[in-house]
Length: 111
Length: 229
Image (cartoon, rainbow over all chains, first blue to last red; front, side, top):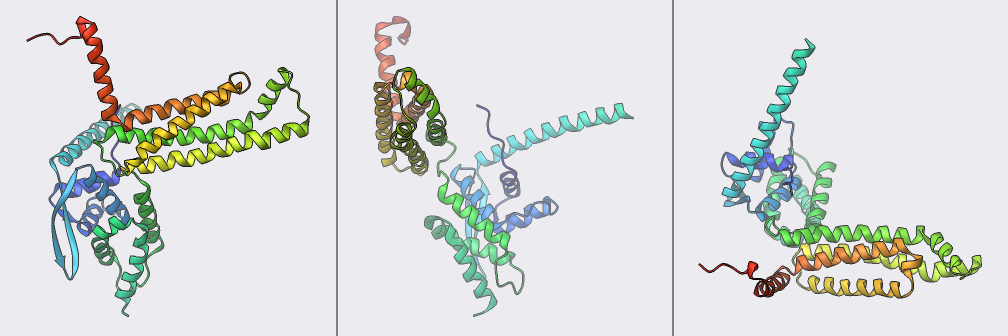
């Protein structure tokens, strides 16, 4: 059976964690930054995804800190999560390369 | 009470949509994120934030907590969702094909007046359709329980299979093969889906049974025997 495609929110969260461990607010800010403001994760969506990813063993809790009397929990990728992200990134890259190559051909023949 | 306390209290109220076990572990952490995102002077959560917390909280209460590696149980949950859909189709089929059943009964010289037929529909067909709707809810309940690893749900599923098989044979005894083929087809499909689900939720037991059968066959059939090293 073919594997299910990763949801965009999941892909972006894993991408944020690929640079190193981050806490919830850090992930939201990072995703907003590298998607150039296109994706604004909400707290509920983020924690539902983090919970799912932890259950699947793709991320794990790295450490906890108390900053200004508030709990910050840092998450990091597991080796399995790293491999899943790499597979998905390669798949997206391959599809995008095909699409761009075909668009070039279409544009070329139209000119 | 300050604006910050006010806002935090309101966020806490919206976080009640999440399961208690999740709140125990993550409430302080999510509150930290929500308060970090909040604008200066904000006293109320925004409508989209409320919707996000409510929908994700509900999703977390309902969704299976199985990991991707628990494939057998995940497939069983998907089959149970399919079962719920089939039960609803069965309920609709029973009511929609009532006319066909009447035609079939007439051809078997069992003539009904309109009043008698209405009584048959009200006394026999509508209760069965209602039971199928209730059964759809039971399938969904079992999907939820198996998705959350409640062991007793596996036993309930096996009992449920027994009840459905009994219903199927009872229907056959009353002539469903002649007068209600559509209902019989859906009933059979339901029993098969349920049987597959039972096999999936008892992987060890059925795995052992499978090995036992292969073992017996290999004793009889020399080609199935493991060659000696």
